[in-house]
Length: 492
Image (cartoon, rainbow, N blue to C red; front, side, top):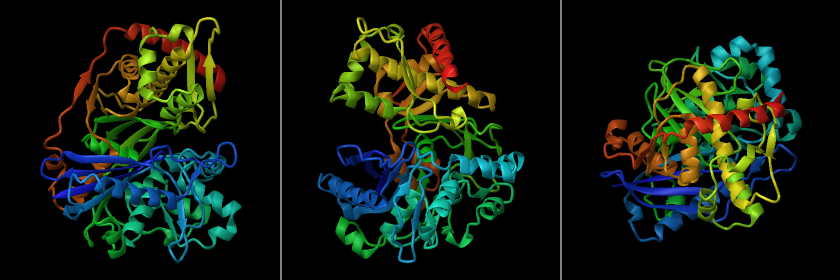
């Protein structure tokens, strides 16, 4: 029996086929080979076309099928992971009304701030665990204010994963976890937020049917099954945002457990059993995949928009065609990059900086001394320093991890970054051979009843390696202090 996991990323779609018995991936593929465009019509805006996600999802599944490493008819369930906070709106015919306003779009910051002030900071934080800020609800309010002719045609408001599940099955559903990431959910009253819907003037009928994350979200239609060589009627039985799903993929489900990712954006994600929130909304709290009203599991999320996207920008701007070549070059440069510092904040408003647009900066360049390799290392160290800045905020909010779990992927493929991360944060990192698409596949197994519980789904999971601090922490502390001073000058 096989499981299919789909990860709707910003850069590409990744799919994995997993053997349900061994929990081992049989194949993983991505589509397209080049990174998907982010449409930016104005500074601070970021959009993508949901139908491009759907096209790429189909092509990714077909690419996996042609490997010949499995029989597509043996796939028994489908799980979906997706980029968080994106707004997808559809009409009465289930057709998209506009491109999705995605997670790193900054246009709705002031709209959300006004809602926060009107609803009241104390009530917002206690009930929503967040300010409405720049999240999905505020993006929908932007559409209502600026594109009323489209807003009046809206039948369903969805997150990106909801849309792909609809395309697979024809059914429109969502979950409390999804609604909380959009800041539509009232945790105290365990219902759609009357404050948010009342303030913005939204219609609750536009929210799809709410189901558990691990539940049936439709069954594969005959048309799609035939096109993708899959079995008609198999369930879409798991659907979660990429960061809760990444934590789930690393078996981070209980209070005190912490995961990290360093892809296009960088995230530290810890689990709490309390309705916790940051008074300044620099970090965010959402319903984790296993949250219920009776057993609270809140995902506390630190997000840094400018992470892997900086590494990608460096690769493009220097004409280097390989991340591995960049990592190798960075290894030859000493810790501290011979005085070059990089602030990685060039991808929209940064939540942990109180929604300020700090911008990216390179400091300390000497044209007679520094090379591309210095820029590569300084970028990776700057990203690690940004993680330290964010972790210090999490520590203020009683999140004190003794170990962090991460997939050996993206920035964690770089020894330079991994060591900078471990020694700057002074916390060991467990590296695992997993990713979001594998986690989504295992989640589908739980949702379809193939596994009784998460413990069974992760019964064969072991870390690839544990990276411990190596004694360079004092040096990294000194470098971080310099970096932090540079950041303070930009945001104060």
